[in-house]
Image 1 (cartoon, rainbow, N blue to C red):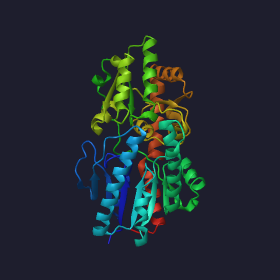
Image 2: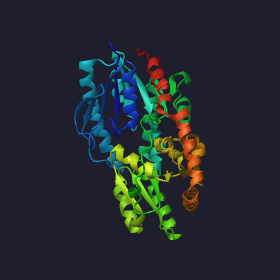
Image 3: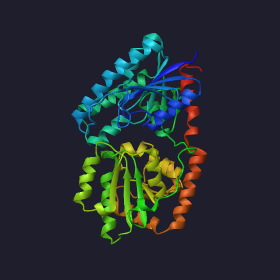
Length: 394
């Protein structure tokens, strides 16, 4: 009989959450029976469906918040549904492991109720929430210290930790006081067999010679306001041959759309919102340069951004700020602007668009690094090791 496991994720629907979906498929393909609880979202409204053997249970969520009260309502609603659905699944299927994927750091409270039945808890550490809070709100208050406490309690009651990089592993060992034997690095790399370049489409350049591409969540800490300033600065230099396309949705999309219009750069900048993977690959494959404008802050400095490896998988040169984990991921595939220096960021984009041979060399370097080091297949052993650590044998 297959060992049954439950994955709980609050941030995004599955399979839209590509990390969680890759984890679920890897576990399913390696002999586990996988159940997932996640929110509903655009194009993922079904309350229950089975995809490739993975049973997915989705629950309703209030509108995505970007202020403190909005987050509290969102977390409370999610917690109610996670509580209800986890018991529903347990009573019927008797799972042996819960994997909680943050944010937020309150999923351990669901797992605590099942520990009396011998159920183990694996914490899949996506975001460092104290740093994330500061990146979003910029100050410490009672809610910040609640994030510190929840993180501490999460580590305390976890039987194993899956960290997205070595920096997060160090947090689990030092701040979380976990034994190194209980912490496993499971990086969020692209599937290099599926995430491949497609033929570029010149019409996606909006009549311009060059296209700069971005993919990611549109929210406060992602630095889209910085990218708008970069585009404006490029426009002021007299360049009219560059277009920027940003793929993705999020709570900050409306705000940056308004900023774009106010800055009068609609003629060189567009946001697509969330689009199918086919369209995403077409845009990024057409792009001459890809960018990661993540704001230099404590959160972004220690976090691994999947968009960097996705750009690399498509052989695209990158411009980003000089952040610790961003540099570790991209290495020679990126140019690194001085932190918070918008002029330097713009100049590096201009240098790349004007140097095609260097773009090609950087792109080849990035693709090679993904194929040899950062692709998802290299993370699967760590994922399976975490499950073996808690006694979940295949």
